[in-house]
Length: 276
View (cartoon, helix red, strand yellow):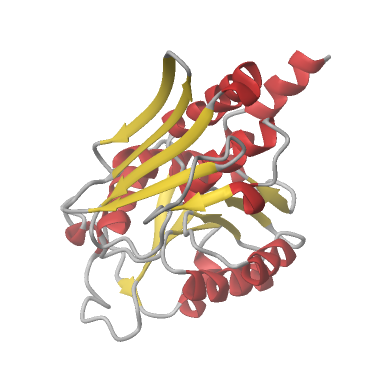
């Protein structure tokens, strides 16, 4: 079965990479490419925009015009646009892969509602390497326990609009859960002035926005006399695109529900086997 894929923001950096990744993937076909209705690139050939040569898919300005042509939508955009797209996809039985970050709790509730009607795979990061790091972080936190200070440092390009990154927050969530803490209560976002001695229970976040950094994340576990650092550095958006494409293939035809990249990679099944 060939999975027909739609891509939002097809003329952007991530969108062009996704177009390239879909073209290289077995069993997937680019069936729709989208941009903002006011974009001058509406009507352009999506393949040419991605530097792949013409593929015959003209960039559309309205998802409603092409939603009937796709099985799965891959959306890496902004929260308001993603929510509108998810709602329309839910109405038409189209699954959605969401790479957008920065949702509020109320916005997340709308995604949860859509996932009761169609399959939704939402992840803060679709890189296989990052998702492996999540497993390593859980292990490290459980082994090291309360004997370490935990700090998370992330760096992205100057155009990223949310901070800390969704990946950094997910990493913090994994560590907090393993330690039996509530991230909302223990997170510290930056420090300035006379902050006093560090509270061992806190999880610190530091954010860098500069140049064209694709995405760097480091989680530091620091004890007296030693420290452990778990780091992931992305040098190309293709690592995210390949993961999203993998998720689209996995999600097609699956039952309604909210999934993440841990489901796609089978990590949750592996964890279940380990507990038995």
